[in-house]
Image (cartoon, one colour):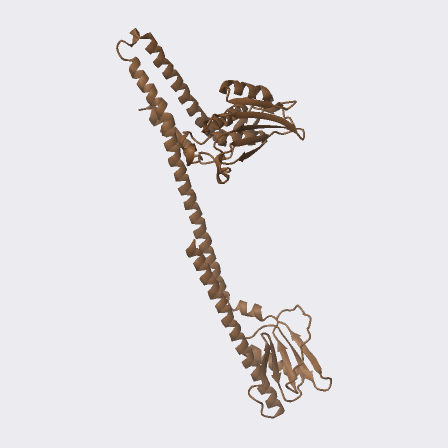
Length: 429
């Protein structure tokens, strides 16, 4: 990044220096061309003129001493001829000083384009008796036109810098995807290998001689196999369902759902750590009950897992502006402001503090966001470190009684292929 800034700075200095040099060359050339005009006027009047007949008043305004009256048409011819001889093809305006009226009398405004321009007042110059003034109003544009080579080189440098920046962004993105892939493999290795290993050990015990003579132990290991298989089935189902949704679309079977009933069922399932604060007078919404329940369970499960004290999750509903608003608030570890947007990304997990000790795929909040988006609702997160988190969902006021399919945002399909190949390798062990 510093090298890119350095290249741009050097290029800017070079262009600025080149412009300053061209500007000095323009003034020097204009000085010589006007001196030639003064010499021709002197030859026309048959007298010897001081070699320093030209005085520069400002960056684009020159005064030329003639020591004698001069015809405007003749003067314009001399100026045109001298400027063309010195390759100063640009607009100019000139005026001749009239001693009788003591003011500048305009000769003309000479333009290289057919568009006529307004004349401006040229100031008098008290040092000379007979003189004419000339101004180059388009001097800056003329000088800039002489820097075409520099401008093209600057454009080329900018294109190179843009291409380099794009390449750098792609490399950084690929690096991030590689890190996400590594974290995904580590997480899925732990989450899937643990129940597989437990099932294998339990199966080995069940195959041992004399196990049938120990019915209590037989039931215990059978229960372990059942619990671990359910755990494994749930983990595999969550990932494969999300992968399938990305390929074929997120299908919502929309029907009228009583949100209070869904929340009451979830609170009963998770136990006394979940409390209800249901104040909405009407909690009936149009939603896919299965996905709504799964999203709500994910939020509750996160609130219970990411807590270092006695967990407490509060499910709340209320009506505001004729819209049903529901939220899930916990007393967990909270989420830092810099991570509050990233937690909804696929496979993202906070890798510091207590959150690092909780294993998972990083799909829970991503799934919640996709469900909310598919329903056309709005999801917001309010959280601070050590103060818990609150996820708020604002539902739509209108009701739509139809079955619809919503396409999820496509992420990296390479993870789908990675997961399939990885799970196949696990079950072939």
